[in-house]
Image (cartoon, rainbow, N blue to C red):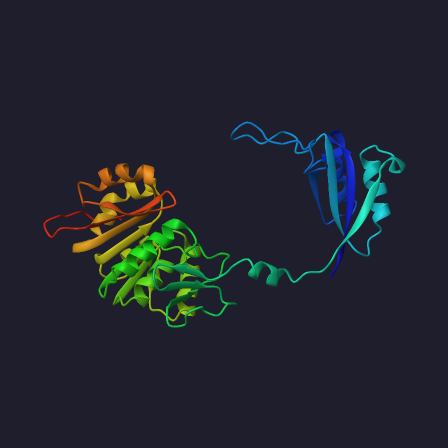
Length: 310
């Protein structure tokens, strides 16, 4: 299907009202632009920090309305002009075609395979793996809750690759399940993923089935009554600093004596604060920093103990 855009240049005082009127007259969508964009007369439009400007228009505004190609664009403009009290004869507009595009293919072209660590590739389903012999995860962008592109996810994946476990692994705040799948593909005997968001659990299960992994996923309440072991050789949590601080007793209590705790979602500037909160339970240090984010890691000594509270 093809479309036609109506392009109208108007004063700021009429831009928003005309936009609404064009929608009412049959336009599919409307946007307002700075008609002087790219010139010396370009006008930045912003409000105070944390506040949107009251009127999203420029002194010299350009209103662009998308319409079906078969629509009567002259009639749409005339009706909209009448609604806002303007004379149609005083409105100058132009039309420009919008050709049909394969939007799926266009979107897919923006996502390429991601190389992580030494031998991990996250590959969208429409791509072939650059190295079929690598650890390959097929994971599409979208409602995936993490595809490995964020530094904190990369840090956790790199830690798991550098410290593969053949024991039990807990991915707390599992999101897409990407860390759980990496742990399983690296040889972990049993992997559990926990997340408070049921949609994340559903996405993780779909991703894990697609990648032919065996990982069990739960919301916290379901895990509590699942009958699974409640402490693990490796616990990894990629969340954010404040929730991680609140969960310090619980996450530390999930680690077997001699096991490892790995945390990310922590800015480098927050590292000392998080380390201090965990100090009564486990000694953490900065394992690696990437783009201002860090991964913290530490081993629970056999003499240490913590109470599982959730």
